[in-house]
Image (cartoon, rainbow, N blue to C red):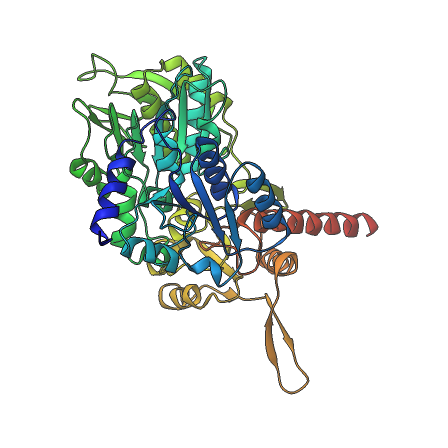
Length: 522
């Protein structure tokens, strides 16, 4: 018999369609897993436990990767291939073609290995798709999923939902793109009642079977265009969060694009569309009235009344508008799950804002210093800038292919000065020149070196942040806010957004301590 693509693929598809629980027959399934960090490791470990034949491929070949490889071999993974260029090739599994590829979120669809799999007709899943399929297991409770995505606010909203579920006495945890890898949560020996699942656009791209009890796309703005290929493709992947939702698709009533996503989604019978807003809620919405977060969606009398869920002041001392929006979205998701107003309030009271997200660092001489290193795109930075005026803005970094004109035009009136960091912040500098030409722009993060002529050399890490903070301090006066909200990724000069944020915190504290010492000595 002649082997053709249609024969093996058809057989694979039939077998894969039946793999909808832990107790299904996964034995001998030939799987290639890309990546060996948290996601890839958990996928390979899970599949080995299920009895699949697994080959792991990863571009990294450092000590940590080699240790992970040895561990995976011990638990039953057949082969681990590390390093370039082997990681770009689709390997055989036990001498035969793979039946399935499980990919880590960082791998673009255009990656040579994934492109080869697609061309061969081999299905590609992400770890989230695998987790959904193995979530049910005989003798263990099966958690309901609440899924959360959006350009910004995912982690905050997911954390709030987790706390609300826990306030109701449920065994619940945040998982996915936050905290616990989703496969680790699904394999927990005791099991969970519910999972608050944060999903990135990368993860959603590779999903097809999820059926969440409630779902939300918090907002949509240009981001990760380099990964998806276009903004339209990015938006389409974000919209997948609503597919097959059972109880409520929650959308942002202040952003029509998310409502259109819900209108176009294929959902389960009886699923409702529920809006959230930072203003007065209409029927079937959660919103804000006179400092109260209220529900007009999940009460019988919603046509002419609302029920109080919490006070906005329960959230924090500094409550920017986007944080209120996140709380309203989380409340809508929790109410869709069936939680009481008291559960919602208790969850919000327990919430503590995470580090690096509009985090007040210090206030001295009338100047407020704020760390928002997690503002890795223009939409997130816009939320920060909206909360303060006048602002000395520390910004710049790895742009990920986005544009800054709309951001700068919207907030030019708030800017007293801009301090640019980043190895190449030309896109942001250009937008400032076009839309805020009168705002001073300082770029301290380059040293002039070289014996023959003046050569610009980028400075990295703590050093560049120390220079940026010193430059901002020289411009700041009583009533100003120095806001570090880069609107860019961090990897050009820092190891992560957390490293960038901590560098800012350390630089501010060092600056203020130096001033205090100088004042004492004088």
